[in-house]
Image 1 (tube, rainbow over the protein chains, first blue to last red):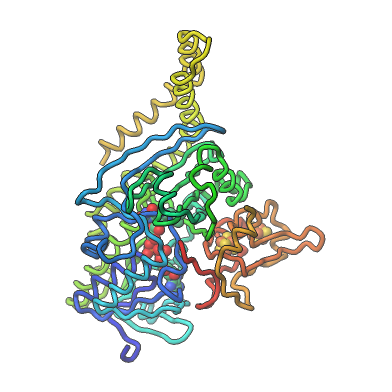
Image 2 (spheres, rainbow over the protein chains, first blue to last red):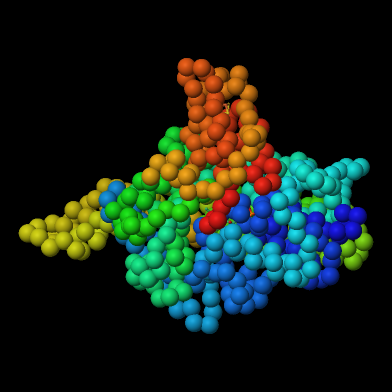
Length: 431
Length: 91
Ligand SMILES: Cc1cc2nc3c(=O)[nH]c(=O)nc-3n(C[C@H](O)[C@H](O)[C@H](O)COP(=O)(O)OP(=O)(O)OC[C@H]3O[C@@H](n4cnc5c(N)ncnc54)[C@H](O)[C@@H]3O)c2cc1C
Ligand code: SF4
Ligand code: SF4
């Protein structure tokens, strides 16, 4: 890189950073993408799956050459009680149009970076940005453990902890209640065994959300994804509730794994990796200032996550593209001021990022308030219903119906569901 | 599977220098010591006898939860120098 100068420097080669780098490089801009990992992806973890449509906007037909694990063809919700469960599954055919793919970040992120390089981006791995360089109150580049690099625009894509956005006061530290801490284990299973267990064809995969059981009464959710020859199982819990509960998260994971309805999925599998990472809650009110003179913030660093729909990588990639388009406009205009870069925020506002975060601004708060209904009562009543349906014994059916109905009435479930109905209605009509 | 077995699945390049530190005097006055149960890698432990917070930084997963959860904002939190720290092969 000549004189350590680029037109745009991007810090962080996660989905947000690679997307921005690729779009800029394709437009012929000189872009330097920096990551602290030895190889892109080596510091990252997620659930998880990437979403086909939005990923293909950056990398068309990526599934033909990218290291994807399985095409997600089933979404499942498992509601646990202490010993039992009800499971709700939505299966769809993936013919022709893919919805999502499970991926492993060390492979996936690395592939994405190679695509950005093919488009012409420079990539500097093993490079830690220690701080942003400021001159006359404006960001002019980055300081790394080796050298300083300079650019007209710096795009901050350094993830949920974003030390850099905090350095220049664009963002504050998130609070306990604005973050979840997540852990996961990757468990090896022979592909055929895995396919049998989850009733999948070759290349098909499933994504599972798990509520209740050992995770009842707190804002926590389990997840399970099938990869080629591994299962990713984990859970996330909000920091404020974990602090109150005082149970280490790895012990909660053990409880989840040993639940009678979960254990058979991972039986005899070998745990090959444990990992942890935080997720920002992603509400409109928590969006920091995402641009200033010569600088923009994208992805998790800006809190762009939709926790309800488990969307993060897609919003990261979309925000990366919008920031890149803004940078291209600014470079062509030769003006890197905050007022020019405010175009980025306009684009965010017109996109699903701000629209969806606005829609879900209060959703996590609402769920926390009603968490006992959602993760305790609802799973229990659902199991009770199936128990009545499936138990053949000497008790007359009418007595069983009465018992169930009286339990439902006593539990106040119907009253407790009313706020949910209003809440759902509000989500449809409020703008 | 206990936490040590979980951590044993990971690849680390261990640095001789800690990227984490806390002012022990402040820890002495910290009531709940949430770092000791929030951390997914059990990096922090409180030695009752010596009144010292042990920081097994070499097990850190670099998630950042401790710096947020510490009620006294007492943790100086940095990323390890490049090439050091944890490596996720299946993240
Ligand atoms: C348990 C879990 C499950 C998830 N499941 C899903 C899912 O199923 N689907 C989905 O779409 N999303 C999911 N997400 C969210 C998704 O992973 C994130 O939203 C997404 O990775 C954000 O991308 P990003 O590029 O903004 O940040 P990151 O992916 O965090 O990338 C940031 C990059 O910056 C680098 N970096 C940081 N600081 C510096 C520095 N100072 N110098 C150099 N480099 C630096 C890091 O090494 C890293 O590569 C999940 C997240 C978690 C934790
Ligand atoms: S939470 Fe903070 S102040 Fe309390 S013991 Fe841990 S590091 Fe010290
Ligand atoms: S960053 Fe995460 S893993 Fe490392 S010490 Fe803090 S809480 Fe533990």
